[in-house]
View (spheres, rainbow, N blue to C red):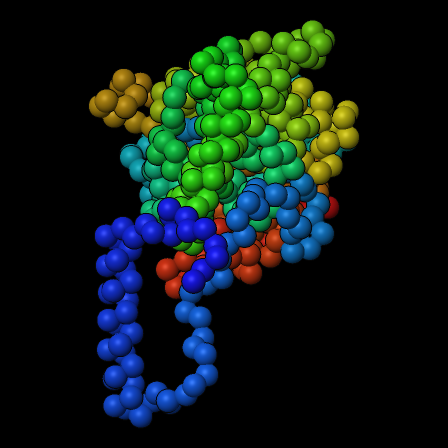
Length: 492
């Protein structure tokens, strides 16, 4: 007779568990008979080998800090995502040939998404900045002061000239299939240094962008690695982060409730090992509780000195970047900051008006953010990435019903060549990599595919993109799929 008190959960056997045990048992019996008939099964008294993976360590958070594969140059990442596709020839890739041939046909063997017309000169002037002499458009004149910290990649290229697949490729490494986002991979590999805040935060005002939460999905990685979305159009903490405060129960009472819920969930999980959804839910409950004590402080920019707030400037983008710096200081691993929500950088018409307005919303804030990180000694190990999902054509887009109101003063999508830049985190400052052709249609010199960019980012974080994998559905998956090469010339 057992001297241990029987527990209620030991008596629990659901219909699903009964079928699972019975079904798997019948299969094992059938398999043993088949193997015996074929002379493959040895009748042995040895104990059978286990057929299930070892149980997960209950109570160990998957978000705990982890060491990368080798010494990293960057500890954290900020991805400044310019939604819609900013024009490279109007921002960081000047093309005098467009001015010379303005209004004239230009040669190109690259088909565009829609029919385009003649060369369209940039309405913005360019100027050399810093000791490096990097040319930057007047749209980003304040950011030009940081030119010696920028690593400008003028030879980016992608696969498709449509927003949806290009967004997925840039954020998740695949244009079509559900794959974990770059932030999820970083969190999976490195964990986070603050267990009271999400390790991967996504700030996008006024609702979701195109493809919605797929842009920061964890896909087949455990759900705990998915990005936490924040709608930064709000300033009040209770609107910024839903349910951040519990007005009906004290903190002590809420802790007791959560402890009971966790105990029940853990007992449930012990019988159902490797259920990622259940483990993610348990972690989400814990994180939501802990956030109540730290998120209110992290997202409250009013606690910053007035001089700092003035340096970043007014508006949502300035507030997002100031919050970003505060999150980085508190150990958040990956922050994605979206810009161009209500009016994206997708200027098929009125590009002079649209780009000037959009750049005006973020130029001062981005410059202040880089300077702030540098002054605090954080830029060296913080990798900052700027760019959209593709660029824009150097030719004018012809009138298209329902797209550009019959105007001929905008540009179409262009994935053959565009510009991104990085700063800090071990990249070469004051450096320009690659080039597009003389008109800016396509990358022709030292081309960098999105997979190559991802491979380089992972190396900066301390990972070999070919061996940093996750086993799923019988295959080892990685951010760069089966492609990508590290661009070592971008690394200091």
